[in-house]
Length: 286
Image (tube, rainbow, N blue to C red):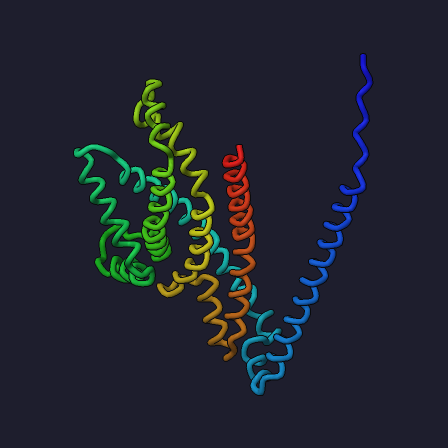
């Protein structure tokens, strides 16, 4: 049994490189910290030195009003969170189904492709607020039996609007898979459905995960638009607080809560994007 050879000691040149990189890292951190502090001081001086700052602070940054309206806004935010979860799942499923319809081959599937194209063209062009008004104000006006609540109709408006965007993202991922992989799968005896399920869709979903998460972040902000139809979510609760206290601070509270809600989603999106870029670089170098 032979003894394991000890690793060779780094040369003087290598030690010099390591020390240089360490100095450069410390220098970059110090420069970034200094520039950040300087910019922060400039912004603080510019904002607090403005002639109308005291009036703006009383109207938008009143701690007493913020504390009094926070419970109601948190209750409304819980509705936004539940709506976001349900609409995200619905939009992803709808977008994936539409993308698969658009990629069907053969003349017999032309009507399905035409419907899918018409859907994506229409709802990517229509403003979300108009779709929201039509579904939440127009559909209840029909007085049909079994009409769902305004919250459900608002969620449907979000799903069909964002489903159109996600369908195009899914389609881009499906078409990015090289045709040779489909041919190889079919040559192994897999059916079209099995090829899509086991070969194409796993790769397509992995490739388009960053833009899909970006769409979810956008939806997280737009769930607040449901307040236009009447449900008391965080935005609507803030509006009620503004009317009660004659102060705009509840809007700032609701906005801050939405930002805090978006931070984890944005962090996950950045992490997935960085991971995808590293994987592509590794595949390219291999």
